[in-house]
Image 1 (cartoon, rainbow, N blue to C red):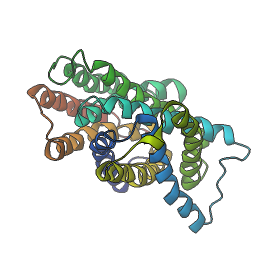
Image 2: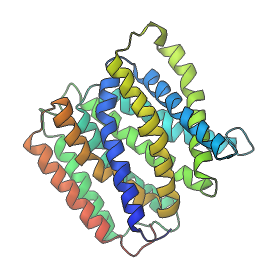
Image 3: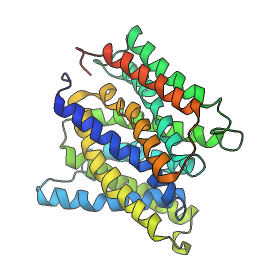
Image 4: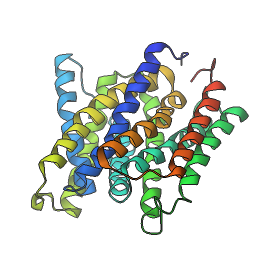
Length: 295
């Protein structure tokens, strides 16, 4: 893993904007689509440009080759499961809250990376920064206007979804030598395979009557927030490592709050703002003690 350069930071920033905007689009999409169907249509939309890209660049798709089990497992843990869980959670909480809750990813990612990688070990100072950031998340659970007895379960479901992203990220490191486009396309195809029977068996998508706004949001989620974003994410992961990549979760809340407030008219309380400051403090401490290391 190399020291982060300007291009790496720029890609991390772009990824944060894309994923920060994805939460209000998920919220809009849930008005017409149930969570499994939403996740399925999202990955179908995402697979189309990915397949075209691989065809254009003459890249072999190895989804069903000798190493199919890795692609299948990553597709399940990195796409199918978190997409469904986050859709379930976002349907019942503010879109920006879902974005903020994704900030638990560095905590889970750093712990997992410490035990399952050789070059991304936790230090006391890095752990301190991550815990401070997580402290901002805990503060949100004391804001009864935002998280209460009616929706706290959905907040926890969203956090669980973010944890699966970390698991999927670690699994992706096992095939880091594979081409970016191949891995992204192959895992997306496997997520389609997993989600299709679940959508048909549990939900009845043929009975839905989606609105134009929900469908446009779902199209954005598929092509931009999934297809393009996964290409960027995999590039960051293989070049800079899991811990560096999970720092995107600290930037997501900033854009999530901006989009939620201005586009969704969601209420922002003082605890939300204080939590954001705490999270940003955690970012600073973590990044300050992560410089010069392979991340």
